[in-house]
Image (cartoon, rainbow, N blue to C red):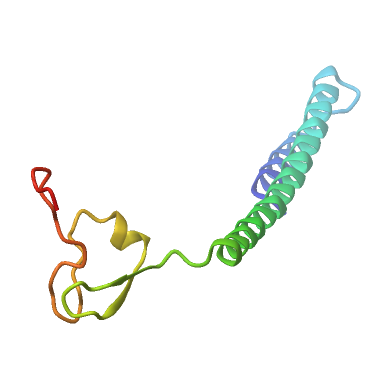
Length: 121
């Protein structure tokens, strides 16, 4: 039972302890209010279950989409040949997005030379 349903059951127990007669106006109003609260609690519980199911579906769709992207476009690795030592090195998106210069792990020199704008090379 969900948290809201437990609270409604607690309030219903409190109301039963008041020994209000259903013949009285107060008793009828309280009974009707508790019935509405129970319906709301049921609806909330159903919505929470549906939301959990939808979240699972969305997660599966995201995973499937990532798998399709990998199949269509390959992984996100970038391959470079070091102009200094000739070794092939792979870098991922994080490496490429980094502000740090890409360094060859073999000779420790920059993979992509940093040209000044004034250079005509």
